[in-house]
Length: 296
Image 1 (cartoon, one colour):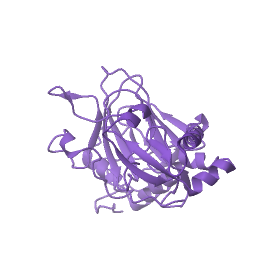
Image 2: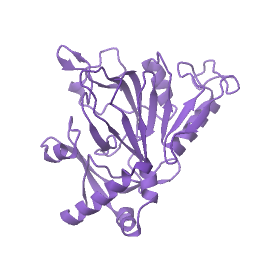
Image 3: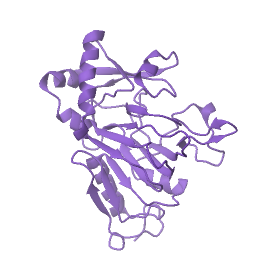
Image 4: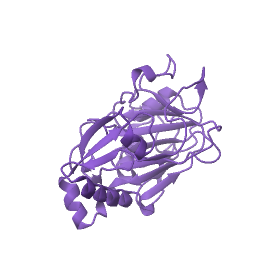
């Protein structure tokens, strides 16, 4: 059997791949797979189906995964996305792939080599402040602290399905403005920053492959509902964000070295818990390119 890139591939019979749900609403662990090797078409199809259904895939024990291995995995789900950070902020090294970005608190010459190096980060979607948000985000753990720095995910599909009638009427026809400031990890800092990027998006978006609806709002970056009075709009957003972050819609991932995660960036939000800034935390990040969002 040949892999998608033409090299020898491990068949499903040789390496049974199993997908085990982590919660009733989102997240699944994939076992029986070695991503340092090429994969056959059946395995890739299984991964894509699991991604569409579970929204977050967790693949542990991928020790020694190279940048090229991670890129090959990402391309099962679509073409790589460009870096979201400014070009003059690039410090990953000349030999690193152009699309890579590290989430890291490591320093060289007194400067952080990566992005979002320290502290807690509120729930958000990557690049919702652009016309074409990333379709998916993929993180690989190279070094993680013993405590803290966990990533939390919440299902925007489950939140949409739970909308009460009055909110659903607003969401189905509504549009919201999303605002982002680099290095701001809480909503107050983003709102008060003079250096921002922003974009207006539908409040209900469709998962591209299935049409499944998702509630597209988040605590960190969603600033207002277009056409709604500020006080009334803020009240609606507070209700929607509380719905999104219900514990029953969430999965909390405690990282181990060798973990690889990929998540649906249109149908989930993610957040980070605080951790000791003296602890080494270094993760390699790629994104899957997205398209303009389609209303649900």
